Length: 180
Image (cartoon, rainbow, N blue to C red; front, top):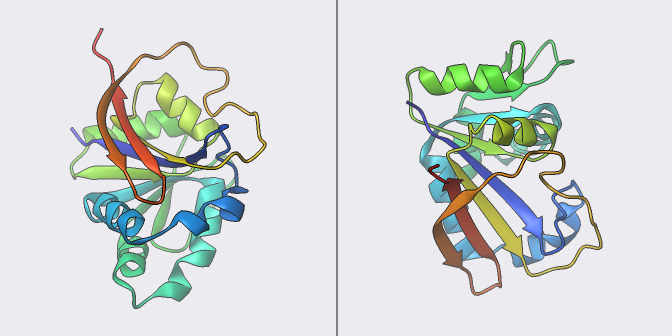
């Protein structure tokens, strides 16, 4: 069975919105790049929601020539969307319910699926217990936002699998489903 890994940047007060580009880049360094590269190069495909797909398909193709960008551009992408009918950038739309489609992908052949982005799709995957590893990148910044990343889902207990501390102050907490 394929593993689904989600990688999410989050401020100390819970901001995971598109505003993260206002506060996250100042913390990106070699440690950050190395960790991100390991996640990306361990994956066989990407799983994205439509908003993340739209942003990524505009920002990554022009960066060709860099190993990380080349890997990002080359990986097959599966996009959850109820409105998208056509894709570019080596992507396919997940038909029907996104969580059901990811459950089917996990049963199929291949290796790790890596998911970037947060929102309703992440909540649906968490509710269905489809995320095998959740990499929460806590950045040492308060963004002034109070929305909950997992607003509306039932209590979900997780097990800490790993913790990575960066000199920049970023702490990556890796969680997985807690056995009953």
